[in-house]
Each structure stands twice: as structure tokens, then as C-alpha cells.
Image (cartoon, rainbow, N blue to C red; front, top):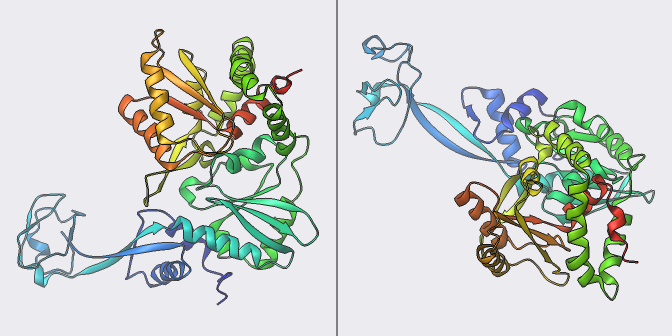
Length: 395
């Protein structure tokens, strides 16, 4: 069996690649597939032993008040008293009951990203694969073309959304069937499913990569739009223009073009139940980071809701830090107009995990986005979707 192309059962892999799924050791085929996925680094497993409240072959089966009860009692100390969590009936003589065993699945984002990049890099048409950020890679082909390799379930906004709004050549990898996008959303893009990677061969994947390396037709190139944005900031009056003219002009453009705003939000609403509507951000402090998902549709609805102040931040050489968030919150709380939220416009995509954690903690406490961070990419996406690229011209 090939390490990168093990040709596992596609249907079983699709069932197993879900956080929280349990696979019983008695299901030998599924159990072996799960162990193979664990050896590949795609999942972690936790073993559990348990009794069933009502199991036909147990000596106490006829004594059960509810012989259809599906309660499960985890094995701990056979000498202590047990009660079924479903029906409440005591479980006696547990030492005589059959012990079942299963494993619980948890997906490993780092292991998945590593496997995906190694699998793509092993293809003959690929020259190299370079990591960009969590869940995103730059793939250079032997013929000189390039594309982004994006693990949809874990990628940040720039890489998750770029080929939906710009001409970015991208190959999307969908990890879990729970997050499988509806087909019409991806009909113009090239994507593969993780359970296909472990069940198909290298020739099949190579064809997917080859097709994905062509730009999406009739779209603006993200690099050209970003260059115009950077040129605006590089001019002598770049920072002043960004803070004093660009942000107010963008607000005015939004107010003057409700139809464009409605069309953009409509696009997001159509994919609101798919993985394509969410993007991940790192949260945590020193020595501890985790990933959290942000619902883009709900966040952008609040961006356009009004009653907000705009904090334009130009952290070109650095990163949005937690102490910046504290200052923005103070500004918000002391503003005499009593706005409900602050929208932070960044000229960079760099946001410290502790800053994201502070922003999301505020949301959890308040029940809405009290501080909304629009990174550089998100601003570029808005400019393109709202026909506002002319705002980048300072002359």
C-alpha cells in the first residue's frame, strides 16, 4: 500500500473523517481504515470501553425495564455503582456484562495539511510546494505555472476566498464531509475531497492540479488590485489618504450603492451553510494557539449595519496586537456618539492570535461583533465586489 496513495475505501473514509465519530473495534474493516488514517497523521483516536444498558446476550437482559434502551455506560471501576444515563435503571453485576470497545475520531489539522502538501509535491508535474500560512501552500509546476493549494476547512480569509472573487488559480481540498460545499457553489472551481486523495491515484490528482493551475476567466487578478492598494500607501500622502479620505470615501460609497451591497451579501447568504462562508483565525497567547471559525456572512452583515466608528490602522511593518484592541475598545467606549461597534481597517493581514482572542471574547460577551477587524484582503474583496477600485486613486 502506497503511503501517499493508499487506495482506501472512499465511502468508509468519508464516514470516518468527522470530528467526534466513533468506530467500533468489532467493525473490522472500518476500524482498520481508521487505524490507517491515524498512521498517516490525518486523525487522532481515543479508545473507550463500555457496556450497553440492554444487550441481548447479557445475563441481565431479561431484567432490564426497557429492553430497547440504547444507553451506554463507560467502563471505569467495576466495583462501583452504575446507572444508565438514558433510562436511569441501575446496572448490576457489570463484571458479567459484555465489554464493547470503540475509538473516537478527532481530525488533525496539522497532519492533514502536511499530508496534502506532501501528496501534491510527489506529483511529477509539480516542481515544489511552499507553505504560505495555516492550510495554504504555493505550488510551483514544472512548466512554470503556479497555483495556491488551499485546505478549505482551515485556511484564512485571503486564501479561502481569493479564487471566488479574483482570478487566482487555486486547488481546494475539502477535509470533512460535514463541510462539503454544495456543488453549484464550486462548479467553476477545481476542488478535491480529502477522502478522494486517499482513495484515488496520482494520475487522477495530477489532472486536477493541471486544470486548477489556469486562472479563473473574466476576473481581476488579486495581485494587480493589491499592487494598486500598496501604491496608494506608498505615496507621500498614503497614510493620511488611507485614514482621512479612503475610509470615509468607502463608507460614502457603501451608503450610495445599496444594490451592490445587497448583491454582495446575497452571494454570501447563498453559501452561508457551507465551509466557503467561514474562515479561520488563530487565537491564544504565548505558547498556546488554536483555530476558531468566523461566519463571514454574519460578520459582513454587521459591517453594513451602521452605527459604527471606523478605526483605520496602518500596521505595515508590524502586527495588530492585543494592546491595540484595548485602545480601540477605549476609543469606542468614550466616543460621545455612543456607537455600538468599531470597524478596524487594516493595511496588512497580520493579526496576533491574542488580538483575535480579545476580539472574539468581546463578541462572546456582547452577543455581537463589538470590534470588527477587516484585514487587507477583506478590504480588497470589498473594493472589487462593490465596484470601488477607483477609491485607490489619490490623484
